[in-house]
Amino acid sequence: MLRAPALLAIGAYQRYLSPRKGYGCAYRLAHGGTGCSGFAKYAISDLGTFKAIPLILKRFEDCRKAALALHDHTKDEDKSNHKKKSRWYDYCDYCGICSCPRGKSSSADTSPDCSPDCSPDCCSL
Image (cartoon, rainbow, N blue to C red):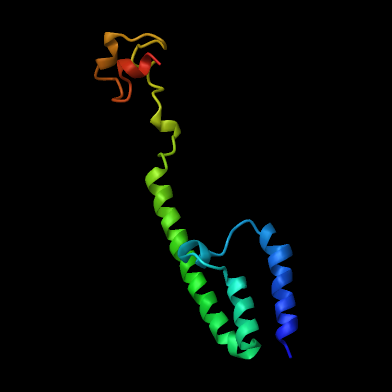
């Protein structure tokens, strides 16, 4: 009785909404095979709406777990591949204090007043 409307709704989702949402099913990305909407479509067509609902809910739970695992994995990749953001205090702006004009290096860079960041290499930038 509800099989045809459910299959129609899933078909409309697959055709019109899914391509526009910008990401794929996390379960499919993590494990391969069909996505959750395809699984639901096949389960409803094979078992009927009411018998398929527990299986579909289990699949959605597994998909949520896969999404969390993929999200954690991409966070770890971002942390390992992400360069430290430059901050204003990471640059050598002390060259004037060290008597090192920009573009030149001098022996004054090693004076006690000099910041450790103000080296001849830094001043020559």
